[in-house]
View 1 (tube, rainbow, N blue to C red):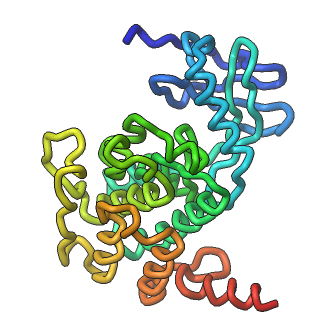
View 2 (cartoon, one colour; view 1 turned 180 degrees about the horizontal axis):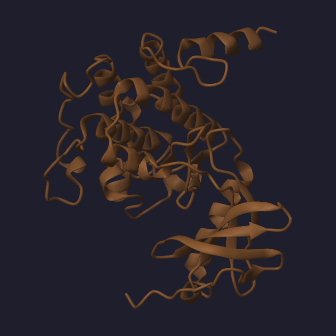
Length: 301
């Protein structure tokens, strides 16, 4: 791979008419992201740009278009929002909501996290996944780095999001190695199996790592240990304060997609646990079965 190009925008540089760079905030193999001021929003947002050498690359353009389609189709309180997509011209980019707050990966690395904190967050992510899957999409990159712990927790980065039928046709490993379900690691051995259950697996690994401060296959030198063996069992110390969480999390890590709970089923398990914990309220409702009672009353009219 050659050297990665950069836009090297200085503060105030125009990204598009009425849209100006403030400062760089991140970069990857295919993208650069900038904190940006947008005149139309009259607010700060995030500009996610294809790197200069990727602008003329057809595959990179299609990935950007796929993310734009997902952002246009999805709008949920626990999911990052998209405001604009500039898919042609010299600087193809997406304009995304600025979600402020630490990432779950940062909190876990610096301070650790306990069940009383994690279960309400997990319910928020389950809600986002239930919505995404109900709209016919899958996220495909569920991991601690893609969860922002703001005033309202948000699932971010739809770079790999696909419609379910498109996901089922994926032929090469797709995702982040440590968090990928077996069917994502080896699609050829699992034809047509990539779907919503892959996101539940990614959430399971995320919750496992957050509680235990290790991955389910800690110390393995293999690229995909999840193809060779089952996850190590969570210990009593890992889930102190919420022992029932071990069973719920381990259910997400069943090798066969059909054996994993759906996001809604997982939420049902976690709600019962969260309702017994001394957790703070979020807004008007305590994270737990009270949400479901409110939803049931609403549906009943």
